[in-house]
Image (cartoon, rainbow, N blue to C red):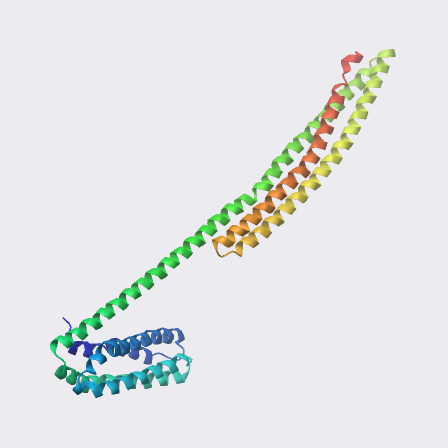
Length: 336
């Protein structure tokens, strides 16, 4: 069990240790000085609070210790003055070190006075019950302060966890959005493949027509009379279809290629703009708002792109179908 003697004698230990560390720092150790001074200020304020709220009120009740309280309070006021001045003094300055040394002198004199004058008077004037009550109240207050510090530390850790989780959630959501940003181009690519197949179908018809026409010419060279005239007319028709097919399909393919490249460039630029907007978000509400706007723009863009590609694809497909039907009617057996 802690006694009033032990309490008064051991209370300055932590402050003295912080003073020693702080005095040994150089002017270049800015961060270390700031950290040590913050700890020292907290410790000195705690010591004066405990004295003035738990010890001095009891000492004022006794004639032998009443006058000693006044001197102790004056010492505490002087220490608070030094602490306030130090808080306004740059830690890298020479003045800071000088003021720390002065404060240390004041504090150590205060400790000596308490051990020399205050402690004997307390032991003489107070009953064992009064002394023990002071010790218990001070230790209870210290326990409360430690609990408050633990609660604050836990709250800081919890806040850090929440912030970290929020950041991770934003990152995961960003990854999902980034993946979705490429859905539009992939859909456009599938549409392009459909159109390319239509163009290839038309070109295949042209190739077949050209082959049949070549066969017609060979057969025509081996025929005479009316058969040769029929072959000539059918060959002329086939050549006309082939020329028209080449012209239409070439123009359609060029139009589609230009439209396709334009859409891809437009989508890529929108993706870059979207990523820039998302990268500026720091909270989940901001991210969700940006994501909703991005998805709205992306949906509208996808609809517009699908419509534009569908128009080109339809024109190319219709041309291919028409050519296919006309080319199929060119049958060399009709003239045989």
